[in-house]
Length: 253
Image 1 (cartoon, one colour):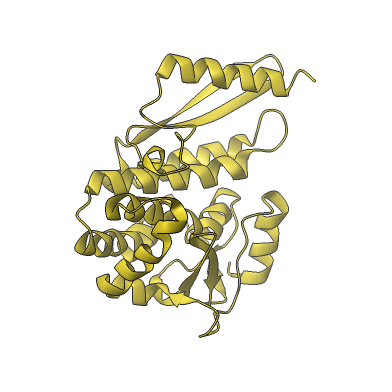
Image 2: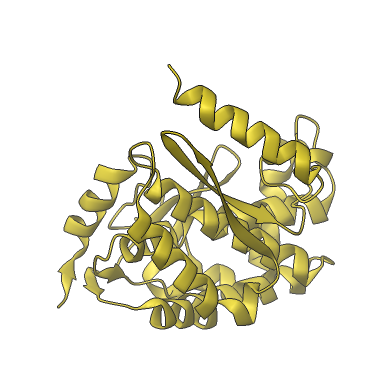
């Protein structure tokens, strides 16, 4: 069964309002086709450099890390959310997608292919990684001296953020979304295996579901940065205690 892109976007936004998407990318107004970025490391490096000051850094490695992390969240966001909700999945290939920088990061997405197709975890992982993220990471590294593991850790963390947002409904979340996320993690293991893991915290009337990174995106090294709430540099026991306190506090009111 196929689906209409507008219907899929509406269903995703009904669950997570900020997972937005345009369905056309005009040549003006700052839109850049993803295939242009993936195919031209110099163009990509220029786009990264243009965001550096706004992110509070003059370090090209940090700028590249944060750009890649934002890209790996925004570009797959609708497709991963659709998969998580067992909906037909929009196209994720570079030819069918475009991004626009706002707030000093690739924060706007356009999908220009209207058809959506059912995909299981393996099909989505292949389309997303082989078809888009592998060449994207290669293009970033062609223009920047930066660790491959760092970039794939950013990808893993960004994808986990999408799944967590989609499953966050009610006091105990959506168990079906969590199951599909785990299946996707297994399918994506050739690229992100070992770069993080899921964990849960049970409270009397709530369940918290978290991603635990094994790498750092370097955000804390920017002028106004801090540690992400899943950063590998945080003490694991302190992080678990904070998560439990936040979980029980938010559901005790």
